Image 1 (tube, helix red, strand yellow):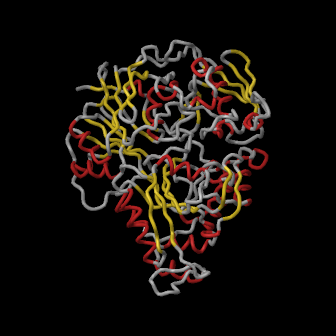
Image 2: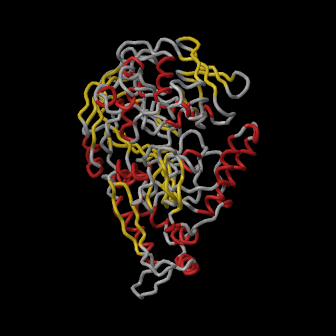
Image 3: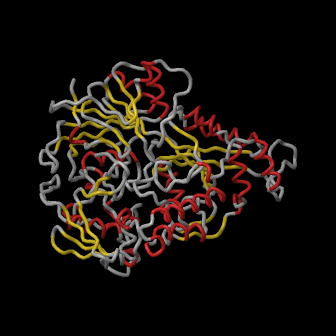
Length: 573
């Protein structure tokens, strides 16, 4: 099942709310798109489903090493997560079940019996323990240490002070006890319960070599409904059904995932070259405008949003410590002026069409902790206000060239970076931001950066990174600590605030909020208001998850938590 995962590093174009289409639409075109949509039912078995990938996978086909949405999408077909989620994104048992031992710190977990890896070996709790221990290994350099960092002793292992995680105690092959460091309300949400790796497949590979091994890049195995049959790097992945799948034999015989350039995706869907694909707003609009009889756009609410961020401090990635301040964007008046200068309504209409909505907060509105609109400052487009703030902050045009110098009279240039890709809106939407800022006198330089390098440079706060564009998917846990707490890996603005950190810590501390959800929400609202006032990142828009399906796809449906289980899908041609 493809669902809203806990992992927050997934760059996909999805959203929360559905907007009315701009302009007049015919009845037929309105029927092309459907919220929470589904395809017809069918009992037919067999056949091949052809799925389009909008970007080439990077080849890290195990979740513990994956850092791209394309890799994660591929993994979802052949490996399963250990827990499930309801329509409110609350965790519920799946392969894994659990119970609190009574102190809020120690939990007993049980793994479902009878599940097999694709190589025929039994899936046991040993595989999950092996996965957790790998994430805490000092040689593990992937992005998922956050999945174990709350377990007692995990940091000691990461620092090389111990060989095992102290808080993990195996009871038998299907039972384990895990003890956490603190009684935090989201210990379970943060725990790594996404797809595991096989101890048998990886036990003889040094952790430092795992990510580049054949077991990740060429012959990955899982416990999911389909098996990897063939991988053509950067082009396609062919999968065949897992007849021994623990939830029942899949209806489909095969699934073929093919990389299709964004500019050709609509045509590939319309011609039947592929049967379905998640699509970006430009592709959805193109298909909606054409309104082909054989295609339907399914839409689902989600928790994805766009931001513009400012790298405010140095960062030591190895120690996960924020360093000295970078002076260029320290003045909140400058950041606020840059927010007021952006005509977000115009920008969203031009580049997201009806698949996005302006936002002023850093918690997606679908989550229960989100602040109401009237609780946050609205950085509504206001050129005069932007100019006034810049004047007050000392950014003035002192040489008469039409662009402002900094308060010391030196040349000031906004260096904006955006990740590169095949989405045709990437370059024009950054050009539009440049235009907005230059209209208020801020000279701007735009650079498109290869996606992998873009992420790496932000993780280590490379000196070349100043202002950046990001799309984030907030996972099932609404707590934003993983994205915005001072020392967090993905706090890419490197904003440091003891007050903000304390609000986040208190909101998770059982001794502070207990089971009082209102008290917890109040703390998160105060955090949102602080971030809305300090503005280390500028919220731009919430998005909509759009999937295009052909009329031969059966038993497929989308909702807030994602799609229904893959083994239920079918085709009928």
